[in-house]
Image (cartoon, one colour):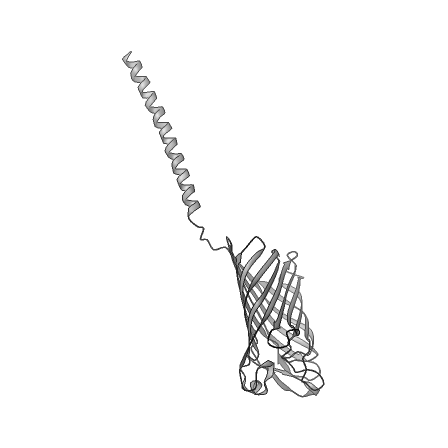
Length: 308
């Protein structure tokens, strides 16, 4: 009888220990889940990349203030970089585009530069799945001197930071799809810089004579679209609109760039770039060279393209 009682006690203790161990493990798991829930996820969710290209092509342009000829052959390098961050209700989009090359003109002869750099950064705080409260900054200019050729006369027209444009804006960013962003702001400051003393003395690009900058306040909108249709074909576009509250707000400034790319081999790609600019303060066109005009440039090229 004593042996039976002892055996029963041992079995009871074993079951009790097993049950207690299960309870402890359950409590530990719940505690761990609670800790993970309470501690914010600080991982940085970045998406980065870009492309580098060297292209030879044929271009055409009209009323291009930075300088150039109507028809030309071009040798051009391009660099496109992006870094997109998203974490919970925070997002941060960054793009940096550089074009640098030479134009070999067909009518006047000689070489001219064809260059531009453009940096855009935008921080967004999500109000819902498609709408962000956003802060945007954009800076763009060029590296080298540019010339226009009215009546076949070489005329100095632009240079490094002459002009340069800086935009600071607060608004709403609507993203109905991952490829499309529509930013609207009624509160925007734009600075136009003309660093070169010769252009400054002429009062070019809207600055007063012998001054090097001007500040403008107005409404701003930018629409960005970037789509890879497949591993061969892609399209990127951006349209900026700015209305100056202080002067002729109905004359909206336009900056638009389009890049269509189609790979024909592993690192060989066909590209078509179309740029359009209208700035009411750039009065270099018309019969007397004192009127604004739509600047248009188109370059069709083929060359090497490598993803980064």
